[in-house]
Length: 117
Image (cartoon, rainbow, N blue to C red; front, side, top):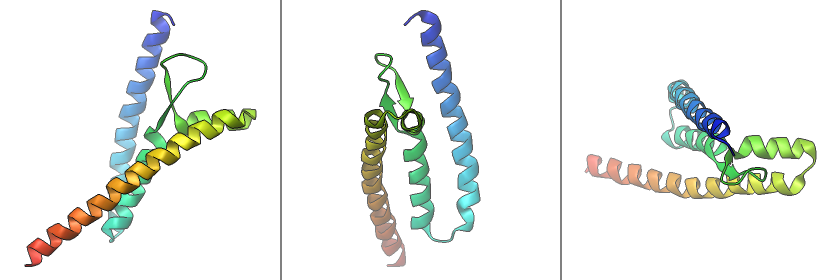
């Protein structure tokens, strides 16, 4: 890929990351109405997995694309194997973040017990 394509790639990921941070901040403020910490953080984790899981492009070497975008587009085009690859990445990222979420709940539980004692 030429320099212009690399610059466009860098600009895309920069804008995408900044937009996600803004969206996540605003959505997190909206989620404050949910009183249960575990539900609130599970929804935040699902947002992170959905929007930030990348998949390597089959068209360009060393280019990464948001998995939801790639999987949805390839699914619409009928390329089931590419769509499955993208959503498999999302499932793997979701499983990893689920483990982190469980560990966070354990951490919060231990911290609340220490404060109560």
